[in-house]
Image 1 (cartoon, rainbow, N blue to C red):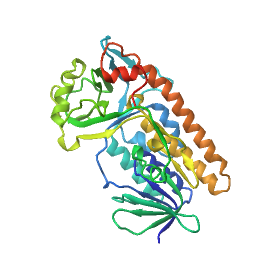
Image 2: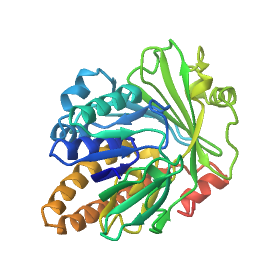
Image 3: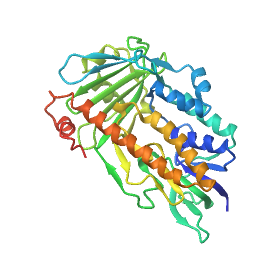
Image 4: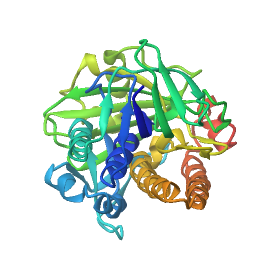
Amino acid sequence: MPQYDVIIVGAGVAGLTAASSLARHGVSVLIVDSEAKGGFKTGECLMADALPVMEKLGLKQPFLNADHRSLQSYRVSWGQQNSYERHLLTHPMGAGWIVNREVFDDMLLNHCQLHNAEIRWQSALHQVERSASGEWLLHFKEGKDVLSAKFIIDASGRARAFTRRINVPKTQIDKLVASCCHVQTDCELSANQATIASDKHGWWYYAKYTKTHGNLCYFSDADLPRPSSPQHLLDSAMQQPSLARLLSDSVPVSTTFKRYAAYSSALQDCIGEDWLAIGDAAVSFDPLSSYGMTSALSSAFYASKAILRYFNHTPQFLQTYQQLIQQNFLSYLDKHNQEYEKVRAENSEFWMRRQSNQAA
């Protein structure tokens, strides 16, 4: 039976980051992911305050060398109010980036391979149990061999593939779902800028992550009307004045159309006996916050530090990690509610839920 110090469930930003951070310190690490290598990922914004953490992880220079597009401002059209521009150049940490996720994830994979972390793709977790000696035993749907580990990290996002199987409760704040698609376009009117616009049933996000491609997303609740196809998504976006001119020559890349959960949530406990959760599996943030990738990187970094100390017989740092994660989530909720309350003119179920803080 293959045995590891740590098995990480999920090969997203958080999982890959934790794997490389632990492996570089001599911990035997295996990452398992239910998807195939190179699966479609939506583009995301990354704020400059992620750089100090990336530097500690040894990722700063590879990230800067990748030449992701600079994010200098947001153009926001909230409700019936006039649109405004929120500049990042005056932010204490400076401008951010519109990240090309394919390039970013390849960087993380290379870092894992550099430090000899192993990865198994298309390995969907089926069952979890403890051995007589107290190690975790992981069984997979594909009938592959059982894997053993001293410690488990759940990095499987909102699916919470591990913590769900050991019955860790979660708190879910809303029902937000994203409908996303890449578009091919030569229009550069929105270069170095992300556009956010509200409509009756939710809000839009658009940004170009390369010279020829952009990422278009619509966020609404799971029980409300949503675009049903790539063309429907683009046609609906074209009804928004702030988006129409930016998408005038756009063609949807149909193979990239995807729906995924985007709700805010938190585990009741993100640590337990020989396990912890990181990234969206621990706490998940509304994409409006642009905090998802930063949270994934920082939680992976601090979790790996806590696990290293745990293996060196100082387990109290796991509790310190949990306190940090929970404090960050409470701070996020305050800012999240303040932003949504700016939209007062839309008389619809989606916005009334946000204004009353009863979206779940």
